[in-house]
Length: 211
Image (cartoon, rainbow, N blue to C red):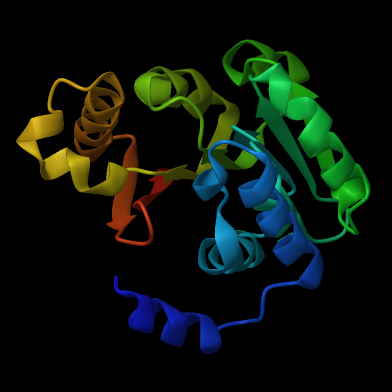
C-alpha cells in the first residue's frame, strides 16, 4: 500500500483517539521496534471486531506497548475484560504506566509472563484471542490456546504475511518466516476452524472455532 492510499484510508475511518496517538508516538520514540505497535488503521479494526464479536473475555499474547490491548478494550461492553501477557519484562516499565493511566485501565489486566504457561491457570474460557507474540511459536500457541477458546469464538493472528516474506524464497530459512509459514499451512488445513487472511498491514488472519 502506498503512502497516498494509506493516507486516504486514514482520512475515511474513525479518528485515532488522542491518548492512543500519544502512545503510538511514544512507542516509536522510545522503543526499538516501534513499528510493531498496531497503529491507527489496525487499532480501529480491532475495536470494531470486538464490538462485532462482543466478547466478555479476551486473551492477548504479546502486549508490547499496549496499543492493541487498549484498542480492543475500547470495544468491550460492560463487564468485559482483556488479559494481556508480555513475555519481555523489559517492556513493563514503559507499558504498565500507559495502560494504568488510560481511560480503559479497568478493562485491561496486564501481566508479565508466558501466556502459554500462565493463561490456562486463569481458568477462563475466552471468547476471543489476539495472537501477536513470537512468530516462531505461533503454531505452538495456536494448539495450546485453542482449547481455551469457546466454540464459535475467534482467534485474530497478526503478522501472518510477515512483510511479504511468506512468498519470498530468500526468507525460506528464516526462523520467524518458517514459524509463520507452518502456522498458516496448519490453520488452513485445520478442520476445527474456518479462516480468512486479510492483507492489512502485515497480514491479519481471522480464525473462527467451529461450534
